[in-house]
Length: 504
Image (cartoon, rainbow, N blue to C red; front, top):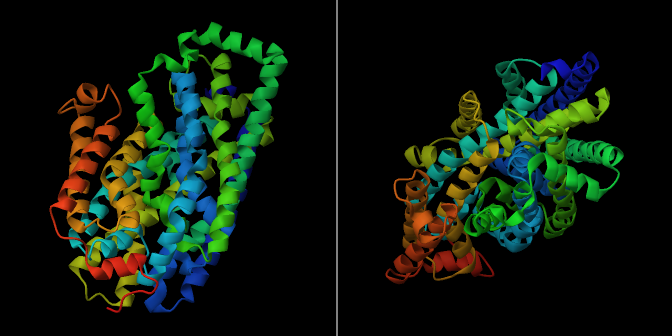
C-alpha cells in the first residue's frame, strides 16, 4: 500500500492532523479551565454531565457521533466491501438513533436525572430498582466488559487509517491517535468532549461529502451510468455478492435488532439524554441528528463501489482510506483522514466517560461511601485515565475486522441491559428482582451462545446472532422474577411517575 502514497498526500495528512490536533487540544484546555472553576462538591456532576447545560447541537453530536463511531466510517464500510449488498443495506437501520434515544427516552431520563443528580445510566437504574447495589454492580460489570473492547476498536480503526495514509508503523499511529483522545476526555470531561464533538461532527460530515463526490464522480466517469456500475460490480464480485437475501434471514433480522433497537441500550448513547439543558434543546437535537446520521450512514455506499477498484484487500477495514488516497487530491485526502479519525475519537471519549462513571459510582463509591469530594475528584480523573489506557492496551492486538467486535459489544450490552432500561422507564410493576434476573440470564445466555458452549441461536433461533436468545431469555426471566416477588417501593414509583419527587 505504501507505494501509492505520494509525498503530497503525506504532507497534507501531516498538516491537517497537526491543525486538528492543535484545535482539539485548545478545546480540551478550555474545558479544563471551566472544570477548574467548578465547586469541589459539584465536580463529578460537571465532569460527567457538563452541569446538565448542553445545547442542541452538542447533544445531537454526542448521540450521533458517539453511536456511529468507527463502525460507520471504517468497520461498516469494511463489512460492506466484504459481505456486499446485505450489509450495505442493513446499515441504513441506524438512521433514527437520535429519535429513539431522545424522543423515546430522553425526556423522562432528563427529568429523573435531575431529580436524583444522576451522572450515568447506572444511577438511574440504581434509583429505579430501589437502590439495589447488585443492579448497579451488574451494570458496571456489563459496561466495563463490553464497552472497553468496543472502545479499543475505535483506537484500532483510527490507527489503521493513519497507518494506511501515512505509511507509519501501526504502534506509532495508535499512539498518536489515542493519546490526544484520552487527554481531552480526562482534562475536559463531558464539556470538553462536547466542544470537540462540534468540530469532529463537522469534519465527519465533510469527510463523507468529499468521499461521495470523489468515488461516485470517478465511477460515473469510468462507467457512464448506474446500470454499468452495477454490471461492473457483478463482474468483479459475482451475483451472490449483490444478492440481499443470500445471508440467513434469522441472522439478518438479528442485525436489524442490534443496529436499530439495540442502540437504546448503549449507555454512551444515552449520555446526551442526561445532560441536555432543556426539552427544547432535546427536540432540536433530534432534528439536527437524524439528517446528519442519515448522510453518514448512506456514505457507506462508497465502500460498496470501492469493490470495483479494490477487489482484493488484506484488511477490509482499509477500503475507505484507500479510496481517499486514490480518488481525491492530496489536500482533500488529508481532510478525509481527519474526519475518519474524528469518528473514532468521538466514541472513545464518550465511552471512556461512561465506563469511568460506572466504576466511580457503582464500585468505588460502594467500597468507600465516605469518600470526600476532593477524593472523588482525584479518583474521577484517575479512573478516566486508566479506562482509556486499558482500551489502548487492548488495541495493541489489532483485531482484523472491527465491525464484528462492535456487534459483539452491542449484542452483549443489549442482552443484559435492554429490558431493565425499557421496563424501568415504562412499567411501574418492574422491580429489582426482575432486573437482576434479566441482567444475569441475558448476559449468561449471550455469553454461552457466543462462546459456542451451547448452540442456542443455531438450534432454537434459526442461526440468528446470540443477541436474540439473550433478549428472549432475559425477558422471560424479568417477567417471572417480577411477578413472583413484591412490587417496587412507593418511593421508586413516586420518583419516576410522580409530579414531585419523594422526600427521602
